[in-house]
Image 1: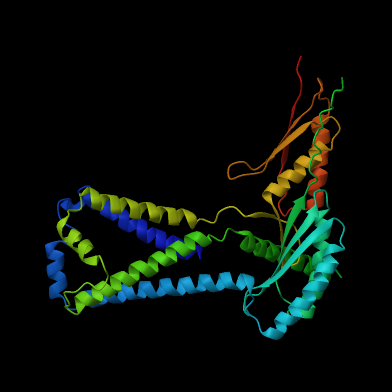
Image 2: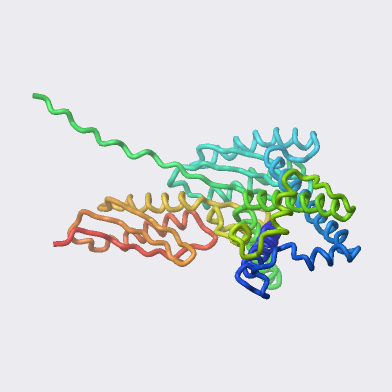
Length: 183
Length: 204
């Protein structure tokens, strides 16, 4: 993703910078239009020029569409995993057990569980909300060793990568009440 | 016996490395907006150019894309130094530069937690880490306020600034450093940042 973004950026920045340089007088073309008469004549005379450019533009448009579809697919898979119905059912059942087991760990107050991705790149995503002073290292270790491992076995994916994001909650500081003075 | 121990140690180190790699991949910013912009731009520009070029290659005088005739006419007429062309070029360069910057790896969205399971990645948000460290500092008797700045691109240390109403801070800095260290031990981040404690106190 980042490589494609950078490549598109470099191509755009390069084109923009080249156009700016030409406008500043590079190659003595500041007063010539972008569609220079010589360029137009070359395009008209060379039978291969326009079809090749058309092919390149078509390839760019096609790759852009594929990239767009990949991004949309990946976004949709965040909400609905691209897995068979049976695996999804098993995952739903296993998520209940995982939720119960995770909540029983010390300091854990809330848990959200989601199975995302497709057959080739599934992910178990968990958000675990803990008390501010919870011993996160222990919670993390116990989650990985017990409940998450059981979830993997229940779903039938022994190598399922799990991503756990911890959030902490802190009690709100008590507001100081101004004492009422009585006459 | 020794061979088994060495093998175990090697396997553990490999698993830790894999776990770190998974955590870095998962907590790296997605750049979804930049990706969407670039893909849309590529599709739109490529599509428009392909349709117009195909019409020109077939020798048709018609411009299938509405408004394209005006753009082509301007590109035939206006010189490179024209303000309109220059503005367009500058906007293109700026957009390209923004995409290049968006393509840089960026800071992880969460602080990865230590672990030796290659299939498990855990992380704690930076703001939560700062808040819990401040909470640990505030639990030291005599500390009134605590503010934490996490490590950044230029700063490698975590800076904890605390304030006490006492005239003499004595060993408060050490006590706060111990409390913060204990809290970080409980969290077990993958890379534990060095901590600087600065105590503000009443002078005079």
